[in-house]
Image (cartoon, rainbow, N blue to C red; front, side):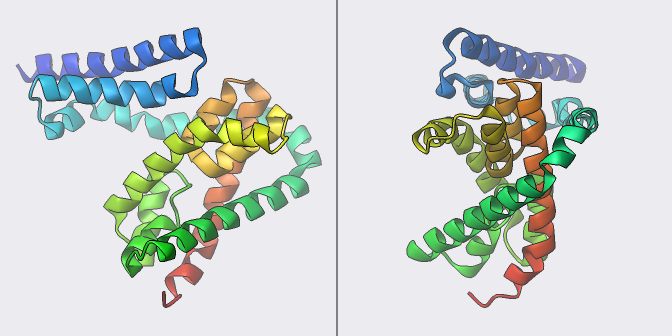
Length: 228
């Protein structure tokens, strides 16, 4: 019985992503991204079938586990395009540094504006990096890791929906620059979106994601030391 539950929940996860991907390929509409559609489909089915989330999480652990190797595998294209990246590395680092800093400072300013408490503000600091690292950094800062996980997911979803239109409004037409921006601001989800434009765009997104994570990890203790 347990094996049957595991099988159908894994099939549900893969089927929901396939449905979202097919819809996005047909419409190219940002809201139809599989990153948005598949969770909605899964939540709907779990709610309709009265399936406990703990059971779903346990059953789909093999799928979740593969996220780690999948992210590591994204380093391979970085090596393939190493000469191209070396040529623009200084400009890339500068752009990622300013982008990461702007994202963190904007989040803190908005948190102050809405009167968030100190732990919540600290939970916002690593919101733009990959969820596992965001959770770890949040714990070191004294934030709320569970809340940080929610912020990280929402940041990724928001980034792929409003990121491309905002970049167009800003006059950014180069897809390589767009890919770097999405990887920096929306982490793994942004990289996935950038890769839909092409391999090099996905590589730029991966580099933005990696550099942003490194910068946040290095500067995080400074934010933790602040008395907000």
